[in-house]
Image (cartoon, rainbow, N blue to C red; front, side, top):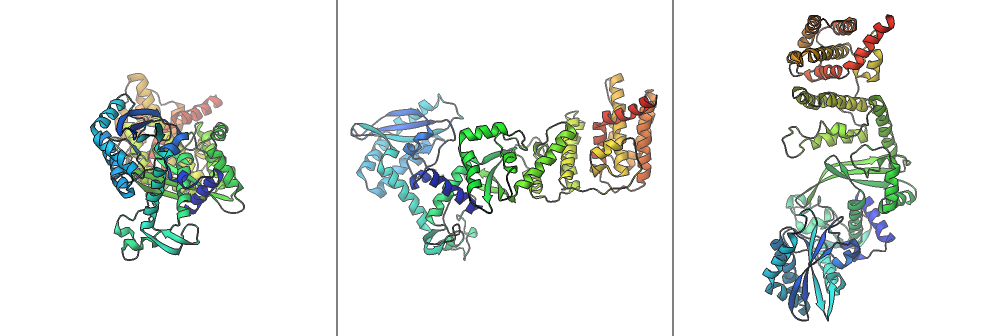
Length: 576
């Protein structure tokens, strides 16, 4: 994966002829934002005022912003404003105190003295300006310098550019060794470093992360990287952040294309499209199908490619400056993506509704809706991994989470029918992809065969069919009660959808008797009851089904009661 990111970075640097400074500089914001300039007049040794400017990405080489440690100054006197006083003191003022002393430069010393002498005025001025801005807008604090009667950005002064290069070079050289092999390019280099902090999920801050006797001086053995590869990795990471970073139902992932054979034309074609705004817009307009909630998703476009490249999905979570790998799905072929879209099409047509991973996320987000964060991410990502890699899923495991949501909606009279439909769509999708399998039992033909076949082999079992039809019959009773009494008292009999085998067998005669009381046990309902009874008798004793499974099929029957009733009444209408 890192070699691929390095290739992307190399392509970017070659295409745009980027030098070291181009790569080292970060974009403070993706779009929008304000730049706060502390205006310092070197000619008069005075602080002038604080000036605001709209952020312009074309001027990033003038801002020369680069993120640094959270507890110290950045490599340049430019920092994102969090708390005004802290940002000024820790990021701007301390930069000149620390690096001004190292440079022993009279010019930097003058700026340091001006900032120190006017500290309170500067902070008040920044606070005054910041009150009028939207809190969500990005804010960058830096300085602008007047020298020889001309105002200049720090990026226009060699001393700041050279200081940035020197600071970054010192970081790389701290834990390094000469004449060793780089782990990225595989070549012996004059210098390799073990402190390449491009991705925040790699760290040597803790001794337990270091091989070779926990000696930090030997940390280069963990991950030796040469200076050239470090720059290319960093450029590749910037491209991922800007162009190949996608949303995924509350999560984020990098989509990293990797070439297997042949020349680099295909990889460059994909990267060119993603790096060109106009081409990206045209691509978005052409793409009609998506399986995620990100309108920039390009999986359908990539599914059309040949299997000479693979796709890698890197799910990351940013946590207080660190990056944690949640899931890495490697080597997914375009043909696999094509198959996923083909199965999606089948499910879309079957349910007359668009299927996407949001249907899965519905059941694998939070175990309790009152929780602030999604605590089921691990399970959700395991399912996503199975979909892309063709790994088997445990149906009993899925049912546990299906029913937790379905029961809640049933008890609260919420989106019960929608959640049952979502669960059934997921089940059909997983079955058609071959991720779950069901044992088939040979049975006699039924007038409801079409509907059973339509929803897959999941229903190829007499107990499941009997439970399903009983669920449909029960829903018809509830509909009758609601029409006559504006209430559904029979719902109490369903035990909050926690019925077992004994409850189901006892429920059928109760439903029939209640329909008789309402004088509503007509020929159509009798046919449904007869078929349900036939299947339950055929199932015999000890169904070997969990409570979740029993109630899932019962809920499916309730949800599809109109379809079942339509078939039953159509039969008698035809006979008449």
